[in-house]
Length: 629
Image 1 (cartoon, rainbow, N blue to C red):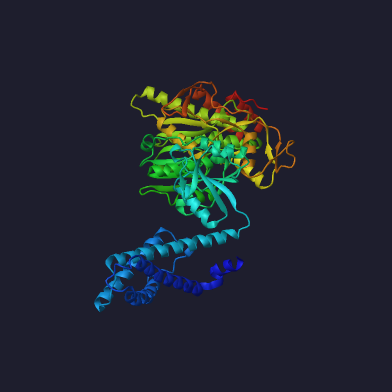
Image 2 (image 1 turned 30 degrees about the horizontal axis):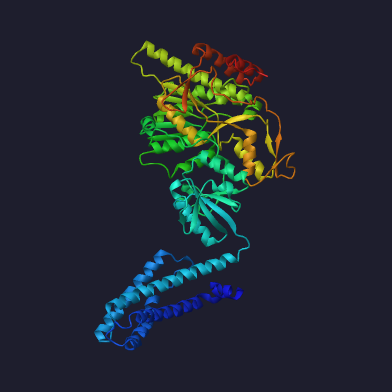
């Protein structure tokens, strides 16, 4: 057997040897096809068969083999022949036989009947195809038999992606596909390439499946969660094909299997966004994003650029990140749109006002903020300056320019804050509310006055943001653990960055001024359960008292200063629905801007003097829900 494998291996026999073998076999097939047909039709020819065979068989060989060579029949790799190879073979054989028939008629040689020519063509084509398919399967089986271990897998899905994956796995030979699994009743009991299609209930009863390969891009997150839970309950590992974007762009191949990421499971199924509502506020207008290189800001830029703004002005003080954001957008810019990268601080009033006036900005998303709780807790002066007075600078610049709308990106940590970051963001919200009240007063005095809309969007954690626990846990798992958890009962809401930004854009289209938009964050997630799930998805086991030999341990470090067990989006617990099921409006009180303005001036004075104690006392006065520790 080993000698046969060596002989079949192209590196041993070489290119010339392979060609010689194929030519000899084709010659045998030509002779065989003629003999088979003559045997079947031996009494139908007007001439003795022996006379026809004497010239027909040599003609097929001496004309046919050079014709095969000339038409590149031997260039294709035998182990990859498919339906196209059959069509090419049939075409070549047809041309060859027509050529021989014409020559025999011109010379006046004894010829078989017309039906004989057709049967020779059919027989030769079938024999050639069967030989090549048999040789392909033989080579693949020999290659696969040399592999040490073949994994038994089930492919979840039965569409084109699943079929392509099965074809790739068959060639590689590292996996044996036991079945396709799908939840479409009409497919049950049917087969693809003799591989049965099973119900998803098969996962609960099969003892042979070692791994499940997800190859159904249309699967909802809830369905994915269900499949993964059942697989884990049956100790079956699970992988998935790359995303459609990676496949179509050529970044990945269909058989480049990837582990399931936690981002694929957290959050809810895709939401519907009405672009017809959003496009009018952005199309052919100048839009500005402050903090455009942060997690939310960057995604805002990605989605705004698709809505054809006249200018997309990106403000950030981080030069490398600003350059990277520009490079990320460079191939996405539609005709008629220009991207402006503005390097500077939003706290610089003159810089900000010049930018807004120069590009006639109409809509501004204020995403620039310090948001890491421990960092702001240790650097309160810088945190308050940036979060509070950058917001005031944006509002002042809006008043002195032609800006029509300002949207503040806020956080759930602004609700009954227990840390300085949350308190500073709550004060930023109050500034937005204060400027909106001023606009309402102007409208009352002058009914013809067109108010500028100041509103905010408040939401919680987003996946894959710089402040999310998910990247931290991934890094800790990659380093072999342990995973550090501040408290086993801590609960957070999660949504994808894309989903959050889509809802922010939708909120902007609903703004009337002074709005507090609240995003429905979905179901709460216990962070300890999240950590355990990430360990399992990494193919590792949890190390605890029940399993002391496990791979990754989870350690509680205690709540950080200002950290809450539960986050919330409402202060007064009052909200009303909007036209979008995931967007609500909070009904909340605010301080009259005249009072707020005076205290802000005092707070700024303390911050400029770097007086931490007085600054925090004033922050506590302005945001009474927060108590200075």
